[in-house]
Image 1: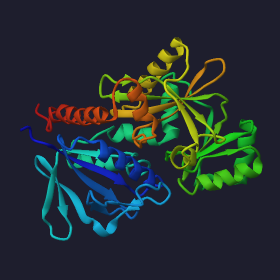
Image 2: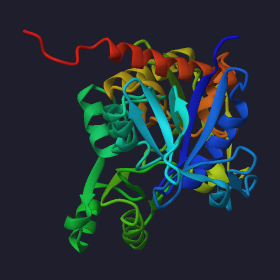
Image 3: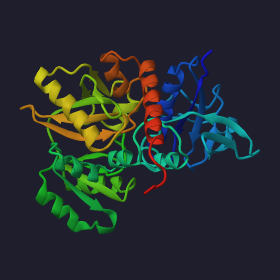
Image 4: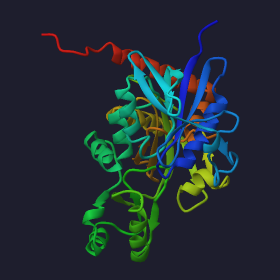
Length: 368
């Protein structure tokens, strides 16, 4: 019998997207083939503690996205370590090895999980892990630097202004009004899942939106409002990535907010595939792959676009650890492209192992 692969599914985390991550992890755990994989549930709580959960009850209120939480009472505190050629998780209480992990599968959305922090730790431990590395993750998270690089690559992005919390004053409002026509979008530069994003129609809403965004990040962005359809495209692969069919988000809220994505089951309609001319489909797919490669991403990502009435395409952002819930766009788009959810997970794990093998071939010391 072929040896099972030990998967360390890492979820939760300290960001504002903690609950979304729990939902993604639940869907992934249920779909992973237990004949192929031993799955270890590694939850990180909001204080940053690593916990090995019991599959029977690792979540509280698992069916309620508003109340879902890690079950700390049934978990064992752990720490990941590396012993030469294998990654291990060790009990903090007993100091004993609990498991050797072949591949870590981070599904932590937002800061401290999707921004390169966790990826850097896994690199130091010399682990195989699903998804982008430190650079791709950091660029995918920081929408300010991301958009500047995409612009240099000739990819259309919306006009934007970046504001640091230390530099913000009332005069900043005047500069925004001079540069943009209202309404505008205000968002934290380093977050996802529409957390902290507001659409401001007037000065009062603009000031409130800025204050709200600064709750989540010390750097925020003000972006022009582009009237258009919201198109999304998933990307899968390492050095030769492929794009899914595009899909369209039809929000029943004013924009595709956190509530529309994860709380309100009727918050948005997903049209998969999107009703687009073949020429536009190809442009979306090509631009999604170009964005993925420009930002040095690996494994998987979802690229979000705005498409205007005259078919001008703008990249809104890339998500290097996109939502993986049952209603998430990433798996649905590849499902419509012929790759079902469970097979998608197999491919991601294999891509992680391939990336690790490629890195292991690199020289570790200089020999003149």
